[in-house]
Length: 95
Ligand SMILES: [Zn+2]
Image 1: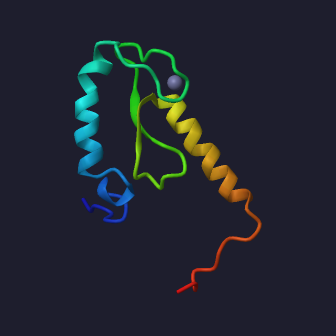
Image 2: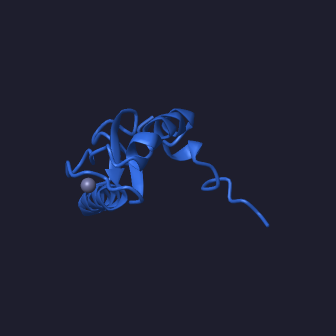
């Protein structure tokens, strides 16, 4: 079985060790139902799938905190849609 190295690791996509450590730090609070979603503000109920969210516009360098997975994925899809609507993507020859 082969691992696709472009997608096989989490570190290449802005989800490195810092992300994993932060997620671990949040996990007990979320599991106890004591955390609220950084996007919609509602409590993340015990057992609900959740993601550690990034603050929009920071290039995945800043974390906003735990979010419902549905809220997080929805926001990501909206960002991608906005980019897809951009009529003039920047050329890759800028350097
Ligand atoms: Zn939410």
